[in-house]
Image 1: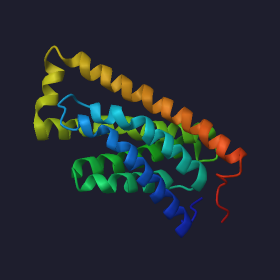
Image 2: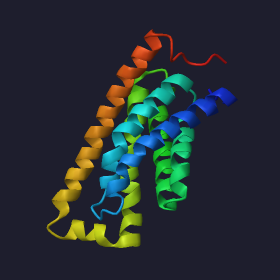
Image 3: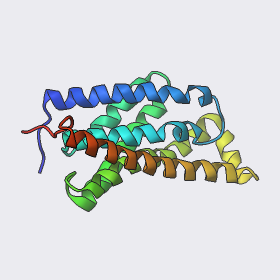
Image 4: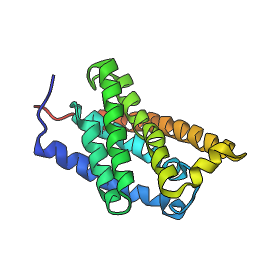
Amino acid sequence: MLKKFHAKDIIFLAVLAAVNTLFGALAMPVMRSTLFGVQTLVTCLFYSLFAIIGIKKVQKPGTLTLYGLFTGFPLLFMAPVMFFNNLIGALLAECIALLIFKSWDHRAAVLTGASLFMILTVPLSLPFSIWLNGTSYQHFVSGQAWQTVLVVLGVIALSLLGAVIGLKVSDELQKAGKLRPYED
C-alpha cells in the first residue's frame, strides 16, 4: 500500500543524506584513482548504515529511492554519473526488497534494501567507467582483474557490515525512543 510522504519524512531523509555526504568526504583522497570501485569501497559502509536508519524511521515505499536522490544530489555537481548511479542503485535495491518482502516492516527487507543500495551501484558504474576513462576495462582484460574482484568483494562485505551496524544502531535508538516511525 502506498503511503504519502509528509514534510517531516522528507526533511529527515534530507538531513540524514547530508550527514551521509559528510562521511562521503572520506572518499576524496581516492577520487582520482583509476582502480574500479575504490570510491564505493571507501563509502559504502556509511551509505548502508544511514540508509537503514532512514528506512526504519520512515518505513514507506519510496524511502530508499528518495534517500538515493538526496545522497546523489551533491554528487550531481561533481560527476553526474555518480548521481544517476546513486538514484538507480537505490531504486533497484528498493524494488528488489519490496518485491520480495512487500513492505519495510520486515528486518530482512530493511537489511536487503540497504545492503543492495551501494552494491548495485558497482555494476551500474562499470559501463560509465569504461566509457569515460577506459582504464577500468584494462583491469578486466589484463592481469589486474584480481584488484577489481577484491574491491567488489570489499564493497559487498562493507555494505553488509554497514547494514548490520545500522540495524543495531536503529534498534538501540528505537529502544531509547529516539527513532520511532512517524504515525500517519
